[in-house]
Image (tube, rainbow, N blue to C red):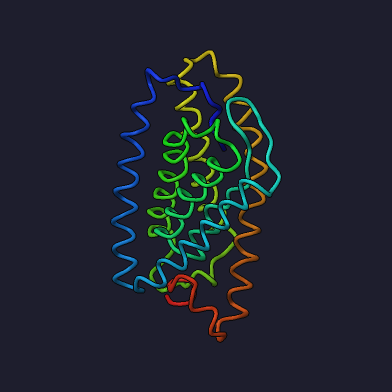
Length: 222
């Protein structure tokens, strides 16, 4: 989901600095909590994995322009479930920046727009997870219904923010393009929970392997 350059012009882009800063503040608080729980090394390792994964999702996986943005398999809920909220947030932000710097420099003026569009839905999904997943449930034991709810929250949030930026920048004349983008994202919402469950099943199979320690503690621990 890269909101296309020019959708929000220079006169209005300042709002994205404020929204991205707020999201960054929440992500920093999450990171501090993660470091206290797991240590600096695991936080750094998980962030590195999330960064490489995000870069790959944006650059390698199929993606195509639709309306005011692009449809990507971001797999935000997968990153959240496997690595945790803070590593996922920083991985998304850094991966997006690297992808823009090296492969899509024309997208860089929209960086804070796009970061907001990724991080705020991630944080909303994290809050939802606390409501729908009981404290006694490890992530490897989640149901399809639960993973669908998380993925829908994230992807729905992405679509909502893309719509906001389009209407904010272009007015309601962008309605048809926004509707086209939202419809195209239904494919992602249907596929991503299956990927989540496949990754969690893989994690379950390596529960006793030392390498599994790099995953978020909640993957295995209720």
